[in-house]
Image 1: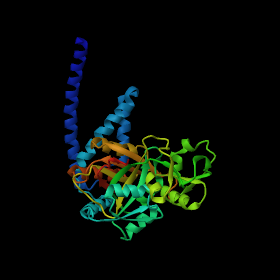
Image 2 (image 1 turned 180 degrees about the vertical axis):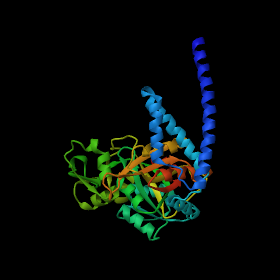
Image 3 (image 1 turned 30 degrees about the horizontal axis):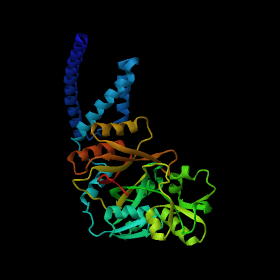
Image 4 (image 1 turned 120 degrees about the horizontal axis):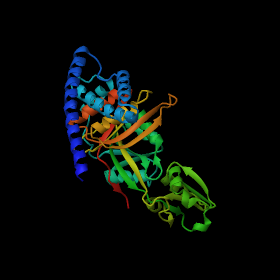
Length: 383
């Protein structure tokens, strides 16, 4: 133990020396930042930064090259943050974000709400869970119809699914968030209890074909495997229930008990999805940003230069800012082959004074950056 204490004392002494040198370095980088401001030079010079990191890695020697690079990537990220405090933001993406913050509205009282599907859809259930059973709501045929109607001012909010706990992200909705200039202002995590539904008089052995949304069929794949039923995807689970109820055929639908009650169907089997804990996360979309002190989650999208190390720079901003990244999703950019758009969810409140500095750093590291919204993390709901 005496030997361990002696070694730890050595480490403590080395750390003191490192802190002394780090303090001196930050004093010099402060002066560099002041010079850049006076000379109109950008804080981030990616080419020079890579050259410096390559040089430090060589100096460190073969055994600890990657460790040295990681150390200096962190130090340089801290230096950039220090220097950005001196610089007035000028990037168009950040200027647009500031304008959107100024234009933020309070939540709408007695809102008009849109969802995709027909009555009884899980999206309607999520809408009722978030806004209350008595809220004014209207259904539309497709997810994009919800975004278009919001753009036209026909409603205050839309509710759309964005991911499922067992089958992952709903890519079409991510693409719509990128396409339309709307904001996420809330979320609800709805427990999905898939049931096999059939008209009165139809028993399990009578079923010839089963209908549902493609996600419903996928989430119940183990249950359906080996059964002699054709499987047909419709626009959503409630549309499947509605169709089966009026078909006059020995068909079944995968949907909720809410659907069964609404369309006069019997529940043949309950809880047939592959995951015992099956949740769909729905987001509440608004044509304008909303802010508030209780909001703890930020969503954003960004694109990056097609160069080595750019994603790492973004990750460093989150790490140094003390922000917990909750999700990172990539989607191909349709008009650019082999280039990707990233969607990120992270903890934070846009009213926090330090958040503007974090967003400035993210904007500077990106070729495009847009805040999708700030909202309260949704609690899990559903019977």
